[in-house]
Length: 174
Image (cartoon, helix red, strand yellow):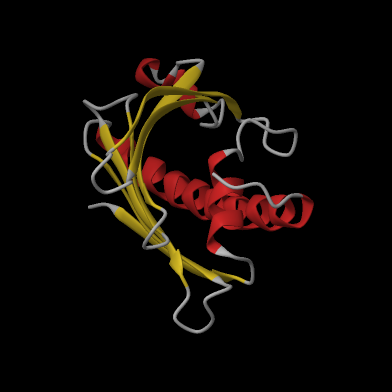
């Protein structure tokens, strides 16, 4: 089966400010689920100016305690890998992320784009598609997919809120 979540948001802030806010959004006091984010690779292509980053986010296991009675779900932390390609000249950033935990039982993938808005060059569009598919948990597949869908939607809402707050607080660049 699988669950898909789509998000489209327009921020009334310049691209540089929104991307900068996105790149430093975690960890923070508003979302205690993200424990740490570490950059494992970063490089700039000298011919194109594209900045590539690979980051690993370590998050608390947010699966409800009742479901963690199943041994495969009994882990303290979940790891997510995020890759991004920031093109400052074209004012866009593509992001791909996936879950590194439970890969034998589930797949979680997100693809996102930040880009200059066609409506107003001082605004930024954010488009995201996330997909979760759980296959190795037997009768729990449907329950876990429902929970995962809710979690993805809440995560998208937190991203919107955090970027809005960060954009109001600072104007740093990437």
